[in-house]
Length: 177
Image (cartoon, rainbow, N blue to C red; front, side, top):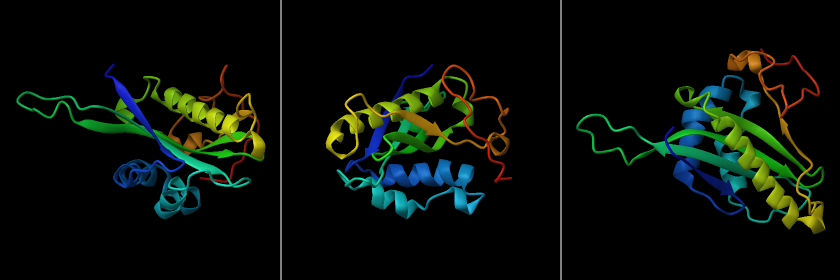
């Protein structure tokens, strides 16, 4: 598998072209079919630039994963990086939880563990923030857990895909088509 690189944005670290591309190329096509499911680009832009947001408000982050583009014969662009997925998430200091809002991996790169790596990175970032925010609801041990809401039918997944040693279904709602 090609080497992947991830960059985490949020808490004052911001890259407008990367956020815009991730939103336009991944979030809108995947989650934009139901308007209530997708926060606007402007909301994410505004929230990602805020550093050390006061409790109890959530702190938003995005982790974007890229890989080297495969060069074809006569193509010298093999060093170009291409986006292959990302995760948008929030840390809630009051509940001390990481909430994954959106998780997307390019179809051509699925089944390689990238989704799990993105979730692990989100959890690591939220653990770090929880430890930093001990005086405002955080915990020296890190966040209490990760919440992931999924719509397996709309995503074309088997309903039990996320169950296993890592995840447990705690509730099920049938509100989206």
